[in-house]
Amino acid sequence: EAQARLGILDAKAGDCNAALPRLTLGLENPPVRETLGEGLLHALRAGCLATTPNAEGASVEARLATLSLKDSETQRYTTFLSVEQARLAEIPPPGNPIAPEPPDIWTLLDHEESAQQQFAARVKAARGQ
Image (cartoon, rainbow, N blue to C red; front, side, top):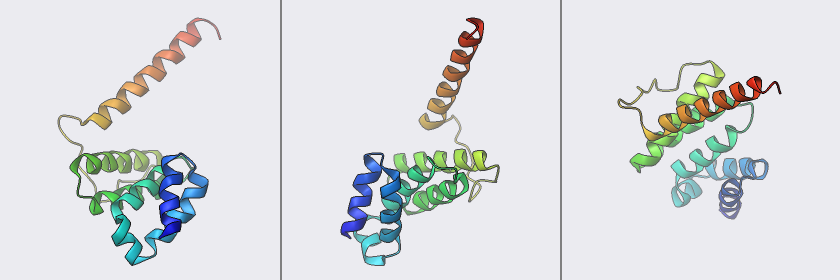
């Protein structure tokens, strides 16, 4: 359990290299999964995997988190993460979730960030940089 708790702290601090093996240990241990929350462990693992080239793994972990979580806000985020990582991996999203109508906050934030990056690229190109 201590290793999984350290994994949680590592993931929240952004140290995914240290977090991933510790979170995996926690998920492999049923009492630890129950004590710390399987959804939390999957969600943090998904977030860490999203920083690696393993978009497919991140998508699956996020889907597992969605299925294990009770909090609807966090479920919406992990669903978004699962769909986005599946898109990056060029695979169908696990469980084929339906995009919410109207779009949820995570989708809107992602669109805003993409628009901002495109704008910055156009400004840079216009300046000849």
